[in-house]
Image (cartoon, rainbow, N blue to C red; front, side, top):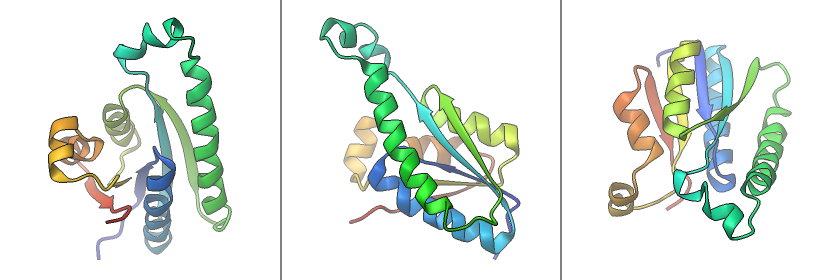
Length: 147
């Protein structure tokens, strides 16, 4: 198996975060690699006017979601105090933000979780995983979240 030196794991949803993070931690420990954990905050352009108009504080909802996600991340990382970990909170479209960070840090492996969507849904909706697979210069591991 190829050893890695810099691993980037993107975490974005509570169900998908834990399996991807756990796998990335295992690989980082086995490779003696640095681990970068990143979460991208993104407000789609369609929400720019809709949130305030509907009386929704989108930034508050995003912060609450991110806090919950980081609790899961910190719980997993707390099990491995000897692991070198860098945490990144990114802003922007998640696949582009992760690809940019991966290039900046020289990641040789990017680990992402799967949401378990079928091929048709991925094709119609687009997919962070598909974009990263298509554009990354690093190896990419997509960790399945379920059936």
